[in-house]
Length: 378
Image (tube, rainbow, N blue to C red):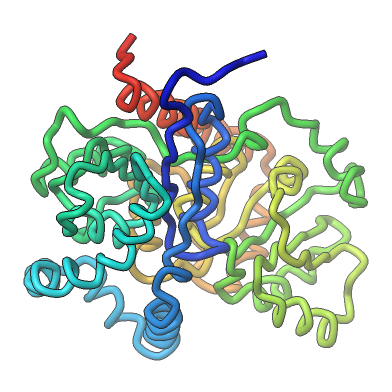
């Protein structure tokens, strides 16, 4: 029987913005590779630590996206705004971070893993947490202006340009590791074949399958996407992952008459089987969604990206020619038909994504954290 060494396991906080989210999925992925004899994971949801702030930020964000998306894009990664925000960090964050600091001290936390920039900022600006080892995990293919350049034990970057951006912002090069975005074990182990996965899900085993996803919250105009592909149903089948967007499922139930080859799926905490069943993925280019798609080498069509990080993820995909874009729902059928008519194009897209995949990022991040906390660099 395995026994823990004296002083172990260490309580380590995994801090994310809210649940469900890509930040939470990334935190779970890292936790799966932390040996319980060494590390006891303690999940910390910032929306619970700051119950008034979380809904306010989320509501403001969604209102900006729906009414003035250009404003959010400007605020998200603008040098002048970032400069102005730095003054607020020095005056407001040390005060507002105390609630998080008190919680971490109360729980006897010995280190923190942050998958969201705000929590990293809060920790680096609090004197009580000055000696707390902090590991920052980027969950998009970019390093925006709000990741703190100092006070972090190690940064885990998704790709080369993001790592370079962290260094340009002042992060010490020796603290920046190129690992990829962490995905859960279900995306890294042996996968069933497409036909077997479809059969397990009750889908037609031999029909070309398109997976449409709006991430954990089911954002983006998914209903219009489903309507757009209706003329192709029978030649294809489509599955729409609604995330926590229950209204989308209700809308589909009421308004869509064609359901034989079209399925809307309420929130699932285990989406890997749906990805395994798919020939093609259509969706918002959230960082974790892309990392999961790459892990299983599924060709991707960019659809309805949100301003800010998702537009920068789109730039990454375009720069490396890893995906095509549907600028509107009406463009989806033509793009899908191109893949239907050219299986070799589908195979090429799959190989390109596989070449950029880092499916073992969570394992590699966990290994680096264990080395840092135990002093074992071998």
